[in-house]
Length: 75
Image (cartoon, rainbow, N blue to C red; front, side, top):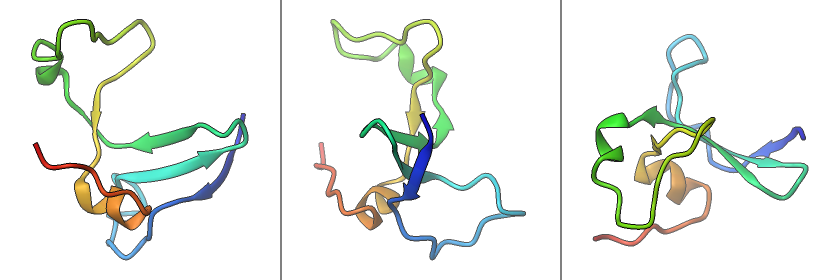
């Protein structure tokens, strides 16, 4: 599995080219995200949801998803 390309725009400045939320397309057709870990939300997941071993709940800013061509719904 490899990163094919970045799906969002890079108009936001990053500090030292890191700590930047991002969306990437993978060779498998899956999508990878860089976001902030949000362990405080794990206890508030809807019933039937959970974070498994080797998984992390991350928050990706709305503007990053929009710049990748997705429009997330408002609550």
